[in-house]
Length: 532
Picture 1 (cartoon, rainbow, N blue to C red):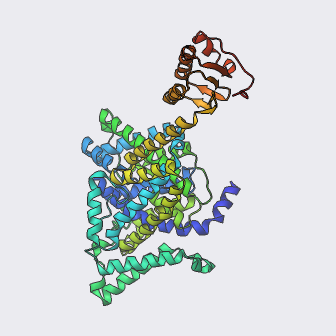
Picture 2 (picture 1 turned 30 degrees about the vertical axis):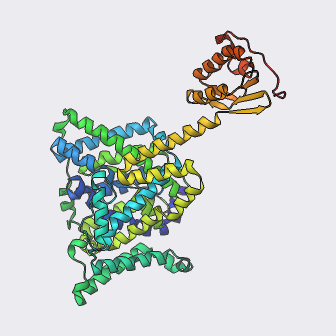
Picture 3 (picture 1 turned 90 degrees about the horizontal axis):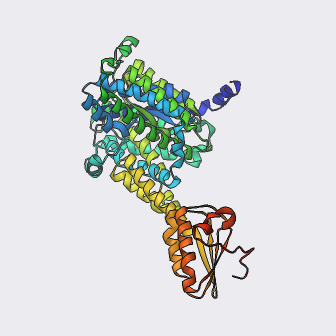
């Protein structure tokens, strides 16, 4: 334990400023996700607090930040409509948490390891592009809402593009100036010049950008009202003022719905989708981690399950690990789970005591922070990097990006996975066997694993062997060979004498002795294929 404490203390100077940045980014998103879900606004804040305080502490991930999931907004909205009562939905969420914990104990977290790197990077790039598209209206002061700005659903994709273009025509000068200067601050703070000064490095750029926005707007309100930012374009947080008011906002699930079968179908849906989003996010965050640490996925499912259980019991929304907040955490210099934990504490403290001051922050400031995060996730250099890796990597990467942009996160990932699997099978199809020729002598060598998917290629090779030839089929290096492949070879052995083809098998007596007997043929065994 002493080692753990010293480890966290070592990075405290990085984690505290990062937690402030994540808190500022998470706050309006918590409210926006709740609004888009058709749930009470405070339920989004509760989910953010639980994700920070509970999940961050029990999770094994160092840099992921959990909170209300924009990817679940449609599911949550429909679930509340189906059940007819938000308190009934809370019961489903609590049960979903128990299911998630069970998945963790059943070691279902290993599913996350099966997502190809090109698909994960494609997901990150798509989310970066979504952030740029969705945050530009906020940066220009065109749109007041932050609803589901981490999500991108097919039914809102066209509206998002339209809003993106219209925002360039409906620019608010004050909001645009705040966002532009905030972006310059963020870019400058990432430059090598600033990093040379240890004192300046201690102040996070995003925090400075927020301070700039607040000071400018207060000045504009007093001296240049035409440049001021309207209240609807500022952070909007309920002012509670006391612990008793905070407790009064908490809601308990209605256990009278426990016998309703719809409760369990909703719970199962929430558990599966939330678990998949979490595993995807964890894989992505591990790739962004500068220290390349690997998060224990089974432990993550247990932590997320506990978080959703508690969130359901006190009136919150579903929780997952969230890439946008996690990316903001990494970009702000977060190093350990303390940054995620403190962001949850800050959410709770701010709601209790500092709501009136936080409501002075322009949304365009926060949009600038997310625009920079989006650019870092979708750098053009990443596209060139995958292009250089060849079509086997570039095509799944690109298809994943556009599939997510024009569908949603999970559908896009499924399409990207299908594309990635196709290229894996295609590569296996070509490397499973090789045919070489030297005069009338042919050598057909089977490599490592040969499945039924290679049957067409095998038939093609065998049909290309001309009459009056000698063929050696070498299976000595094959670790697995499908029964269909054995049958195809056996059929060729029976037909070969009619074409005056001499066939010799090597290695099949040890690895696959049944081949000769199934064909009614006793193959000759040779020590080598040197004469071929």
